[in-house]
Image (cartoon, rainbow, N blue to C red; front, side, top):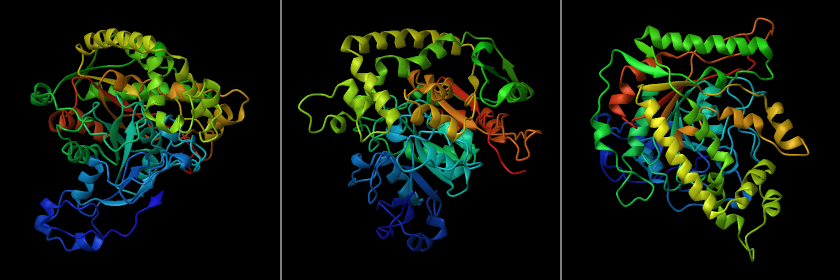
Length: 465
């Protein structure tokens, strides 16, 4: 984590009118209690692909690093609201990954057990909140990076719809899909932070979208609601943990379903195939070319012509797996991009027709929790780079931004494997935070989209009993 320099901008007026970039703890202490802004004195951290004045932005690539003149508008809003920036957090390079191991700065330790991955790409942010180092942290989310680390570190991860929070000042992963997110210990805190950040958007900001007033006016009145879950064939919890852990994951997901039913939820059958097909588009179609586009100036710098796929794959500035992913972008044509957009439009229509039957989707945050060793064996040690385990992690997260949905990941119960002395943790069941959500706090106070997913965290890591 990059640690914060001494803040010393000074106050220009009463707390509600604060406009300076940084507020020192001493200056915050001087603010009268009646004038204290909503985040007064609350420590937070920011993912290292988000600009903060006075800090380098690296996106986990040393050769890419630069020093921004201004903070991202969303970050500035949090500083203006009295938040204390502690530092910037580690991440998967260029936000391409759900594992947290794709970084030259070392893997952020999982909040429960460093042998297991922290999740990515917002690895440091999720781990910092899970470990109680900060009250909240900002992440980004293109394919699940604001939700997977929440699941693996035992905290809440909240993601609005695309454009709801301005992404100006964020290094793009896929700029048309990127979202700023919040990790916090509970849903209410995360929603408060998101509300402050969304107010930083302006009509002149190309990365902010005017809220749909029709959706904003809709209210969830409480009581009964409907929800859907993935088809059984997609709920593949198999993994290195073996059949015993697979069975336990299935049991715990069913407990989550039963928990919603007990709170008035009605389970409705839907066709999950358009969501699954959309998830595959992100890395198996021309959409991957947008990842190259976002950092094209860096990749093409000082080159007479655009690099070949082989040159990108072996670019020494990149993590090996990142080079392999970005090299796939070279093979797509402009026609492929339009074909992808047409296919996505068709899938959106099919998904809308299914979501019209329910209020929300309930899905696992991830289907398995891998160890650092298991991920690195596939992505760093094998002669041929593959990322099948990373891909499995995104099964229920990749489709969300493509379909313009919002999502929240919530943790819950602890499972300790009886045959392992240190215990296996599994977080899957809905917690009280999710009940708050379903009772209407999010739906009423922060109405983000017509379509919503609630993910329950599947986390298995070894922890001393």
